[in-house]
Length: 478
Image (cartoon, rainbow, N blue to C red):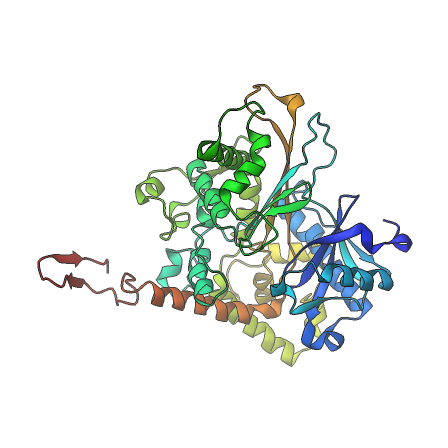
């Protein structure tokens, strides 16, 4: 990009999260990610140019030096920190404001520092030659945490049985975050079992929330059903994708064609997520891949081998997630230890690299952290900064490639898989995450009564119907 020739009309609104807003270039496969601040105190809370640039450079360094060695060179794009002309940034802010969802307008784009993160636009495929002129498709998935904790610090037994995502759904529904409960379970996606994975993706399509999006030619065409600018119906989506999955002369129509198209889409996604050149398998412990909230029959979960191809993208993500051996309940006491130490020795914040820099030596420091707590501040910092990409976004971009088709009736896709959203999480967020975890678990236990044995004190429950004709005896294990 020629920074002195930046024109806001060359960029369009792409999306945003809690802390940043993303715009994409109309002609080039590039996106800019800019910081956001609360509307109430934007002028006082914004960072200086130097602070903002350092913050963004930390994200780049963390992706480059910490996450890329763990997740793999081919999956991670660390991007580049850039300084933009302030006039361009201010005009861009005005341009995209009208395109932003109302629910996101409690924060404003940073127009003070001029700093941004420049990344490839992963919703588009580059370097692909194809005779087919249909625009590429891209699937964005936020897979969430793919295992149950086994930490001895966990105090509620339910956390060993039901995954965090499934419990969080009940909490979000009760607090009005979502209108409908998602039936997606991350443990199904990470199971490596194609039947379970297919069901997981089916549930994401049925209720995408902010965990599933489909882009066509860089434009989002399917996401949260509360977004008025995208397709609102699964059958409508199937008709939109029909040219990619059914021959042009196909006589199939209606519900049957929708079912075929969505099934083909699901199988294409599953194949990309399991793709690996390594013939070895990573076998998953049965006790950590079965969520009791999953809709799958328990016999299927119990009698199925669970393994992921070595070095496939899900294997890489899950392996990195499982570096978290303590759970948030084990991390919170370590945070308090660090907090007390910094109150006594505030100048050591820099040498402990609480705020970076995230160099290769930083990765070595956390990898060499003792497995058992020796009471040291180094242990507390090392464990607190375990790189755990739970908020990762997975991008799988596809281009229909007729030149490689073997069976005319079966479409062949060239695809690329990438991982994004790998920012270092602030050390100070641990207390908030600990409180949130407690709220989620307690709400789930309350909302699942009377079936929850934990709040029923693991007692035997006797129930009769009103007529007194039938008696149900339910034995809870103790």
